[in-house]
Length: 52
Image 1 (cartoon, rainbow, N blue to C red):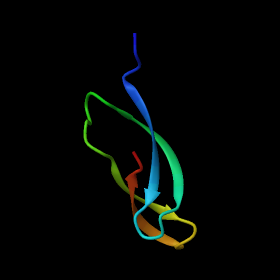
Image 2: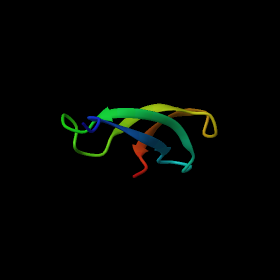
Image 3: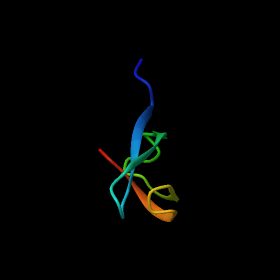
Image 4: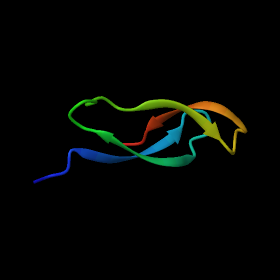
């Protein structure tokens, strides 16, 4: 049986750095993930989007 969780890489929308790896449930959240997280390169909270 295939896993329902999908591993995703989150990329900063400002500088483009790939800072975080997270998982999401493919069935409950079929769209790309967007979340505000801290970017160490920008040194501020920025929007991180799924890389895929």
